[in-house]
Amino acid sequence: MTATQHEINRISEQLRTEQWRGRDDATITDIVNIGIGGSDLGPRMICHALANYADGPKVHFVANVDPRDLECTLQALSPSNTLIIISSKSFNTTETLENALSARQWLLTEMTNDDLPKHVIAVSSNIKAAIEFGVAPENILPMWDWVGGRYSLWSAIGLPIAIATGYQNYCDLLAGAHSMDQHFSQSPISTNLPVLLALLEIWYINRCNAHSIAVLPYSHELRLLPDYLQQLVMESNGKQVDKQGNLVSHRTCATIWGSAGTIGQHSFHQLLHQGTENIPVDFILPLSSHSENEHKQAHLVANCLAQSKALTEGKTIAAAEQELLDSGASVEEAKRLGAHKASPGNRPNTIITMEKLTPSNLGALVALYEHKVFAQSVIWGINAFDQWGVELGKQLSSPILAALKAEPEDSQGSSDSPTNSTTNSTTDATTAYWCEQFIEIHKGS
Image 1: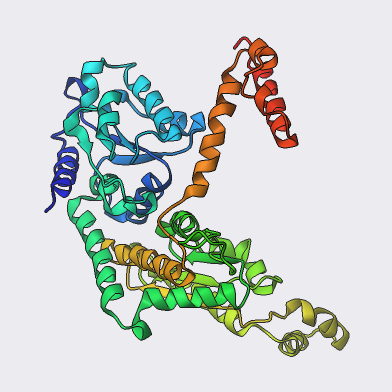
Image 2 (image 1 turned 90 degrees about the horizontal axis):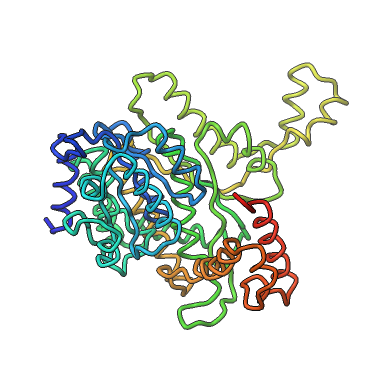
């Protein structure tokens, strides 16, 4: 057992057995994980997916810098009964720090700075910054600085999972992922699931001109899987240059989207079946459920299999016309509606099944997609482990934020004002205009 795993075990068990006490010996009933990107999407998705195993303190997640995200989360909680986890590899991510500062201020409405160590934990590779923020050194869980956020749920970032479901279920999640690691590293290409999925998707993107791929989990617990995979896939392989810095001559990556079935069947599945875009689909299907309602679970499985069959086989115009005739429609009516009811079929889809959604099976599923993404990056010759495009918006937001915080006379009269210094282009002039509108609206507030 590594030192960090030992700490995850210690902290999670202390919280789950009520040995970890808050201010005035209060019981910790709620955990608020503050992070963004990989420090949020991974553990958030896993905790939702393993809700049937959750029997510890209630875990909440806050990621959006929009103040309403944190405010709506905290309004039903008590500071004395709440533990804040600040999850940030660098401990300088603006959104996370803004929310962390607000959460600390909220805690201080009922306690003093001396009480904060009982209510704040940090997961970060920047130990110095976490201590300067006010986190007690013994409450900081380290992580390697070379671990990309979207691959970090296996690290101490997964602490909320252990708190919510118990350390053994957390270990089972890791064991399931490890089993897929072994399969990927040892199996021949002909039976290697991540490699086969990678090759299929490359074929869809580079040979069949697929611009997007839908991930449709037929499981309520897996409803956040498409959100998680959006970052994993698109932040990893959304690149325009190869590892040598040369522009690639082929498309890399596709847009990932989706939602839980059967909800999507009554909204966007129309596009999948009859739209002009050929959109490959990954169906994720646990065959049994944690619910005792076997009838509804059978209905769910039948819907998933039917969607796959419809995408694959479609319906010809002749078959549609014959159905209309058999239902009593006239020949003219059948001719008129036949083309509207026909579906082309031959639309690629994959069904990934498991017996039941367990921690081990979920770990294997996530690792399957991780290795698929890596295999694609190798074939495309790109680096799946950087995300420099994300940095541009961060860089541009700082001077704009300074302009939004400027006094009205400063933003209009100072020659070195962030807005005035960037009005040489149409885009910068537009930015300056909206900064000025914001300042005008909030003048005097």
